[in-house]
Amino acid sequence: MPITILIGAQWGDEGKGRVVDWLAAQADIVARYAGGDNAGHTVALDGEVYKLHLIPSGILHSNVVSIMGNGMVINPVNLVREIQALRRVGVEITPERLVISSRAHIITPAHVALDKANELALGDAKIGTTLRGIGPAYLDKTGRAGIRTGDMLLDVEEFAEGLIAAIELSNEDLRARALEPLDAQAAAQSYLEAADFLRPYIQDVSIYLYKALKAGKSVVCEGAQGTLLDIDHGSYPFVTSSSPTAGGALTGLGVGPLYVDRVLGVAKAFSTRVGGGPMPTELHGAIAEHFRGSGANFWDEFGTTTGRPRRCGWLDLVMLRYAVGVNGLSELMLTKMDILSGLDELKLATAYEIDGERHEYPPVTNEQLERAKPIYETMPGWREDISNCRSFGDLPAAAQAYIERVVELCDLPIDIVSVGPERDQLVMKTAAPATPVKLRNL
Ligand code: IMP
Image 1 (cartoon, rainbow, N blue to C red):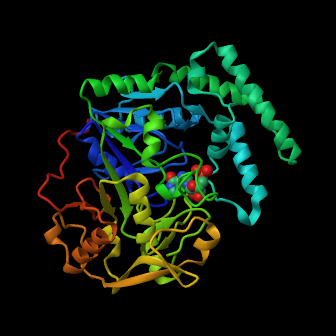
Image 2: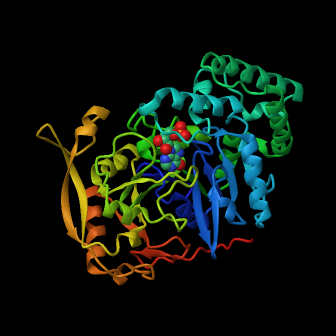
Image 3: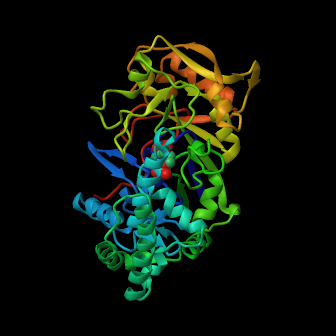
């Protein structure tokens, strides 16, 4: 298993963190390749809940090296905070266990301020970003005006000068919009402290991975966000600014395609979305509430990063089929199957009807997507609590039929289904062991 790419097959929040945690048990390296602290990956372990925003979920395994790739945008101050918070609960983080690309881009306080200002200016048409400065940081990257993590290895004065100049430039923009400018000197100070802390962790990730792959190491690429939020393949402009799809893993880490032997898609057994943009199977009312939960549990459908309630709906096979194609998935994993328990019937959107025409794949414009009427297939639900099921045969017949129908409609195998947040709450179709072979050393 040289490289396994794991991607979100929907609008993010598919439960990728727990899947990466499971895959990491058999891997040497876990590498994130896109996004920044807009992500929120939750891993539940022995009653503890770990919420990771920047650091790959592999960090919870003592034998795994975690990598942050060049495709990411990193807020160094928030990264230092995350490292320190993990250390406080006993997770060992050293430059041997965490490697940060020297080619990732830095999110400055100006990016965060501009993200907020842009959303404000859009009013009702806002994207609903996480307000972490993601879009403005990628804009500076592609506009060739960004500051990179490798710049933290430079002379301190030079790094500070670049940062202050970037903040002052954004201040002009903020003033023009009658918004409060930032204190560039104070911001630079906190970034210099973070740079001091992070310097030993920074190196060329592409070369690191090349050597590791040549030496026979296995790598899990941990996708953030999801296919339908991809800058190219999502419902633009209601997307993030990076490439969470499988192709993004290669450019976001600097590795070649010949090492990839598995592309695993993770999808929830229903649909959720945070922020604006079309969502054809969105529900309002009792069933949406059933999917969302009350917010009392960490697995309820409220954003890990923003706390916003997520929009909920039936599983959308039109979107899922699209994600299968865009990523070239080799298999699919369904999460949160247990949440479907207790409903009399379940619906699967198998196609859309737009202006009297049947669509098997999503149309390109949001205008058409907003008008798309899902064509549903109704299946019987089940009442049983399935959270203790561990094999496919333990599941009620209706749950087995639901999974089989998704397999047929996506033309892809589903061998693993999650039925709860804990590491062992997995249903395996085959007799493969669910228990990780390596244990975390906390
Ligand atoms: P941004 O990535 O903060 O610019 O937000 C752009 C869009 O992507 C918004 O609709 C966000 O809600 C959504 N988004 C970004 N990160 C995540 C995530 O990790 N999970 C779900 N949605 C996300």
